[in-house]
Amino acid sequence: MYKKILLKLCYLDMSIITVQLGQCGNQIGYELFDVICNDFHSNGLCPRKENGLYQAASKERFFEETESGEFVSRAVLLDMEPKVISQTLSLAAHSGKWSYSEKSLFSQKQGSGNNWANGYGVHGPKHKDIIMNLVRKEAEKCDRLGGFVTIMSMAGGTGSGMGTFITSCLRDAYPTSLLLNAVIWPYGTGEVIVQNYNSILTLSHLYQSSDALLVHENDVIHKVCSQRMNIKQISFQDVNKVIAHQLGSVFQPAYTTDGATHYSRNPLGELMESLVPHPEFKMLGLRNIPQMSEHSLAYSTFTWHGLIKHLRQMLIANAKMEEGINWQVHLPTEVATRNSSLSAEQLFNRSVANLAIFRGKDIEGASSEGFRDPAMYTPWLPPDDSFSIWKTPRSFNKYEKSATLMSNSQGLLKPLDCIVGKAWNMFASKAYVHQYTKYGIEEEDFLQCFTTLEQIISSYSTL
Image (cartoon, rainbow, N blue to C red; front, side):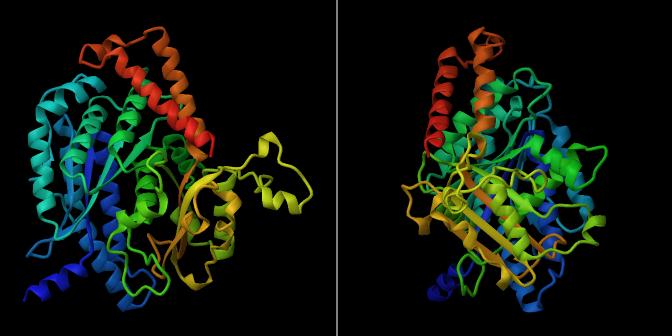
């Protein structure tokens, strides 16, 4: 009997608990679960057996199936005001396909001042026990816990501060579980004057607690909505749907080795193994193609050769979307064959490691050789450890063929350096620092954050 139980556990997919933090995290979290649920309810343009394996793996990973056949998300929802959570619950309930557990929610019924330090230094410690008890109960429902994915704004107020504190609590309470933070990078011209302070505080603290940070840049997603999705009046929901699509393209099941007979049962573990070979390098970016409106999709066809060629050039030229790629950027090995030289403007984006995920029809025709050039990577990591590929013949979210590239590279250096520079200029004149010291974040804490981020910038600059 025990052997049968152990055998069953060996073949169970590791579940992922999503922690939705603040308004941003809850809105994106809802869109993520919705796109995942819609995806595994579709036929996936593949044989029934393949579809069944995919659906079973996805359900076990993200949902608990009740005795009545309902799908309840493996999620904990946190916000300092009940309005956002009640709206999120309502949206899920109206989907008719899945829901949130009303026992996995935390909110307060009073305003919180929207202050990062208030969330980190006051509300986080005050409500720690209640929140961690919600997480513990959710973890106990999993036959095998694969780890945590937190979703939050990097530059928000109280929610981001509390989310940063709770992330450190997750690390302390589950030291052997994997922890990925999906963080939303603020608009470059944000309306919140202290967003650069909030960003450096969030980033530097998460870097200490997390196994990896997966960054989505609002400015980039906004351009995708405008130029690729042809949306005229872009709303936060539009932006959130694109982010959810990109996250789903990573977390939905895939075969992680050639000849595999089952989908990956430890998605976070294999993702970290592929992309985070050194704890000093844990900033991840994501590129996903194609992305377009449903109307345009109906009249479009794609080849794997074309998709992969574009994705590779997007990587080395550090282009964040399909339009506007600089095709003049080449690797040194390619430059040598062209009898030309790399100009300062054409320096390529060097990577620590990359993970390509290909989904859809005729997957056997998807060649990844272009990503295996050692010149693309840092020399201190063996070439075989620098690139990984996951595949599935099942299509994702209405796209017959789609390709996602997760990259641990220099791609985030420029926006990171920009935020640190802006925050430092404000700090040098002591602007708004009193709003943080009032809740226990001292000037020395700021200096430590600057030191941490300057070290990250230095490490990636010298790859």
